Amino acid sequence: MSKVKCEICPWSCALEEGERGFCGVRGNIKGKIVNVNYGFLAVACLDPIEKKPLKMFMPGSKILSIGANGCNMRCPHCQNFGFSMAAQEEIEMMDTNPEEVVNTALSLKTQGNIGIAFTYNEPVTMYDFMLDTAKLSKEQGLINVMVTNGMINEEPLRKLLPYFDAMNIDLKYFNDEGYKKIGGRLDTVKRSIEIASESCHVEITWLAVPGENDSPEEVEKAAAWLAGINPEIPLHISRFFPMYKVLDKKPTDTDLMTEMKAAAGKHLKNIFLGNI
Ligand code: SF4
Image 1 (cartoon, rainbow, N blue to C red):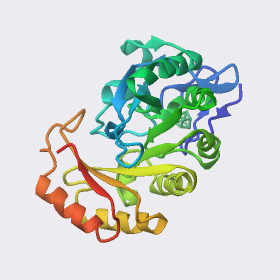
Image 2 (cartoon, rainbow, N blue to C red):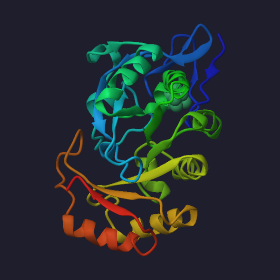
Image 3 (tube, rainbow, N blue to C red):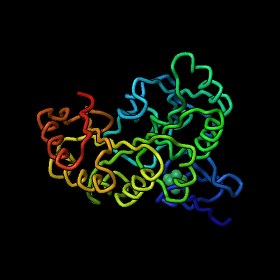
């Protein structure tokens, strides 16, 4: 039987019947690429919007934050590996559907909920469920947020954008070699940031991993590029803590984070230090 290609992200997985892609959650079922984890959620909770992190978008509000399993990158220090790297059968998951998630979001308005954030694992890998849910949510006047690594092809990203109000996009390195190590592509992430910035509020997260991407010079280069899109774009320099396969490094030096902030501040106006 011929293979069918998934067009969601640059991995372009060509899959035979019954096979799953690199992310582990999209697969070829009867000749069609679908989310095999459609409707299954590993986590759903009402979080402050600042936790996404979004500092300059509806501050003080709360948002129903949902996530499943699956990721299309392989960061050895993943802060959410319990969900992102788990197979469906390895974790307890809620069996739900877009209508139910939107109804839950609406019912939480009395507790200050503004909408739905697709987060925790990589939401690009739960694309079908995210798009269906975001459409319904928008019809009900809710806010949609995506917290993503930006590893998504242009066409599927453009299809999502009419339904999204804000995104936080990770920038993990500002060089190709770094991205290669973790299964990502800098050119794709840069393009996602540029395209998303055209139509919704965008904030950037830079998780500063010691010895990997914690040099003030590298973050300054990234900041200079971001300033070319918009010097007001918020940049979160976030502190690393030992996690998943990287347990031998110390948490990021906070003095170095202050230096990184100063370097990025030569180009950007809104820089926040996180997890300190
Ligand atoms: S979303 Fe998953 S299946 Fe599709 S191309 Fe990316 S890694 Fe492969």
